[in-house]
Image 1 (cartoon, helix red, strand yellow):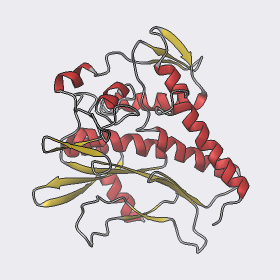
Image 2 (cartoon, rainbow, N blue to C red):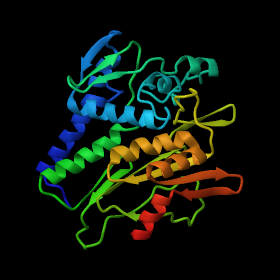
Image 3 (spheres, rainbow, N blue to C red):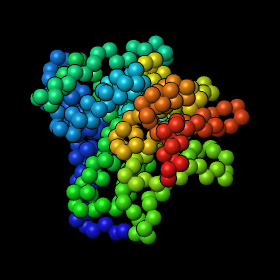
Image 4 (cartoon, rainbow, N blue to C red):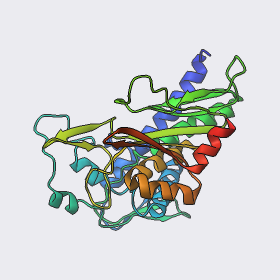
Length: 294
């Protein structure tokens, strides 16, 4: 389906607003201004920013800190933020002591009445594990507000679909595979009928240091890149924001604790684990049930 100019402009305006509020790359964003705010000050946040931050803090609590929006300083230290990039000349990986020193030391508090957040001092918010999924949801809601009921939205590999394709078939999508998976591995195909999907993986962004692969996913509890054998985690849910955040949290938790939490919370998740014998796949019972119904 070819987008009309009006639809294209409207969709771009939605994305531009998400970036203006929540980008950790743009110092002029609302998030950038919060990160520079003086210690002990309450900052009024735009409604979308407040909503996404509140959701991210809930996931942080429910995952035992495995996905923490207050860990921006730690992400920057490892070269995965907007400055001191791992792929630029002169980058040096931090020592474990330096990483431990960048652990979130204080919590952002929220006031739902005034839509404000307390900057306790030095907290660097990073919503990259949730904002992209929110952007997908926002585009989907905007399309529905224009009376469009059949669509597939994709932003950076995260998707949400509703209705049917023009040929009357559901929006069948392949769950994202791992780059070094054996050839001929077609993976899993799912129908996004009112559902979204997001994947977190160690093959997207990483660097090699002392012969070891350092993934872009940092464990905010230890300050170190994950080393739990997970190649990827894919989550399917009604909300792409939830898929985005929980795929990251489950990746940090690992194949054992992550799968156990997915079972307790009813999350449809696919874990792909690197083993000496190759890649091994584990599905939560809710993912298996969803695929059986497709």
